[in-house]
Length: 305
Image (cartoon, rainbow, N blue to C red; front, side, top):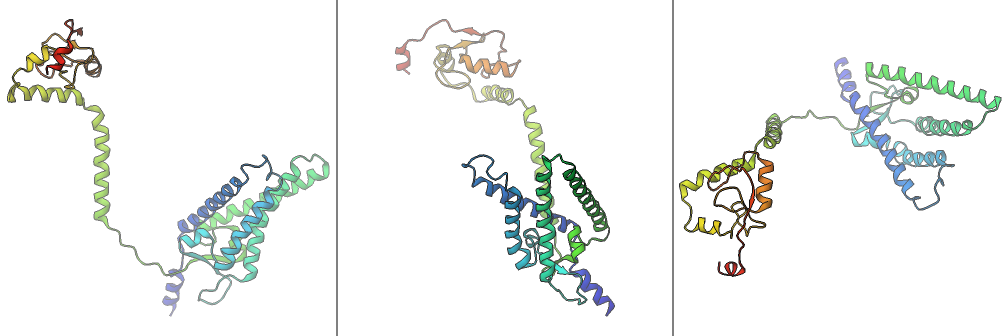
């Protein structure tokens, strides 16, 4: 019987990381709601919400509390992670939701506490009287005690795994799973395949910039020309200046590199800048100097092609 009770207690125990993730999701939701709300007043006078910002925030958080913790016994972050609050003061081993008083005090401690801190800060910010100075010191002392209590509670939470916040510990509500958690089976074959492809992709990304693609293409072209043989009239066509040996189009600003082949100025110039030891892809002649083609090409020759 004792072992069964231990199993029932450990079955609904929530991991520490899940409780911390729920808190982070709640903070992200609050920031998202506030940013969406402020965008509604984007076209109004600047600083319109500055005077009433603590009250507006308190109203929004109260609205969220009404439809999350008060009605569903869980925050939005907890609902996403299949977590809800349980009344830890209840002697029964079965699940007991938080009482109405616990929910109300939760709103007072979280929403009311934030509103009081922000409103007191705005109230004492521009007050320099002695009475306000003493009140400000008292408020700072109370806030410091609460921060210290939150730190001690967090250390206890890391040790025992219960009550992620000081409010949960004071009210006696802790996080439990809504449904029993099944053991997850991890597909290691899929993970290994993904790791392999990611590693191969990173290797290619590292290797490709080191490969001189232009030079490799020129080498392959020079090797293929002796095997296949140059087509009839190719040299005549190139020497007449009607085809660029790199792009195969009509040469723009035709230039030569010392061989019988013709190149566009931009094609040969970019190739030489990219590869210092660039050679002609047709005959393998190395580039020593770029010389513009002196003989002009008549339009009648173009029409005769």
